[in-house]
Image (cartoon, rainbow, N blue to C red; front, side, top):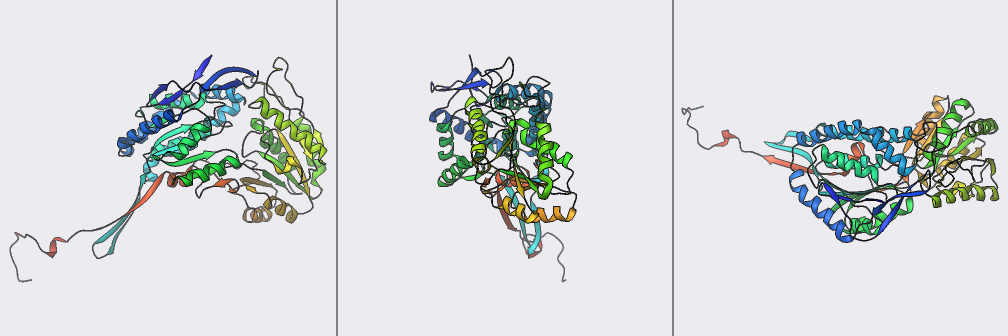
Length: 497
């Protein structure tokens, strides 16, 4: 059985702990690989390697850094199908979805390729007599990233391209459930000419995470995952004097007003709720139907949901693949059962779904729940699966109050033809990312990604200008130089003027 190892100092490094985690093919349920779990000593070795590499990389020219990143982008583009296949094999998402993940990660690589423009700094001359002031940004040192299973290539690329472009060295702890994609990215970085030790991977579990959070030579930690773990990451990182950005969970609401195009809204609800089997923090998990739109909208969503093609990620006919593990599939199915017991109407029931020839796979059909009470677990919890809840609201004001009462504030969307209502929603809704007739408002690479409330812990969002600020520290330099006219040697012909 193949073992996924660590990547330290520009090469694979075998694990020594004797502890391994299983890596499954979610479409079959079979364990295909295992991943080595790092010891504290192995994490320390990765950090030490990164610290040593920072001595030269942190002083390297912007031209050197961008030349590596441009080459990495070229290689990634050439190997995008290969990386997407690794994602599908271990995560389960369909190949087209995996290709989209790689493409969105490449946006941040492209942003990093332009780091020379982003790090220009500022200069004010003659702020006082013969005094100039300059502001510059410098790298932090060794920084770490802890990333989730649902985007095993994209989320790491939200972090390390900007971090290394800014002059830092990086230690990644990817999800143990699907580690191969990030390992392939490490190989491509090496092929692109990234010096040994600038990018490192330690595989593992809580042992590796805690050591990165405690290690005195790690200056900053980026995290994407669930809210409870995000809170833990923030508290432990701050306890050990680290800069931290920790992105947590979500319960994203899609508000549909009576004037909306209901066919368009239903299409977008399907895409946003069931894409990637609902395993994404920006998935729409609640549709808020305002006024008398509910019955018609639910009927349109149900019609579309029943026609979705569910199958293995490597089957071109599949529109949705399996979930990541058997345990997670069963947990998600439990929310559908409990919702019915707690007063919701199950319009489409995806529990008990199987795919012929893949009966051992972690498949779950899509579920649609209508008239869901806000007290139901399916409404209160982040399900992270292909379950869409519909909640009814009499008015816009009732709907906005409902959305803003959520403890999360990651993403939200409004569907309407009314520009005034859309503008009001943008200003009133308490969420970090807002879509107007756009169900999943993930910002492009040169804007920053992040939510409010229990969806973000730390002051700065990820990637974009916030990402550059996170991976650098500011320095202000004030200078005064004597003017030659003030004295000193002067061999010119003396005059009386």
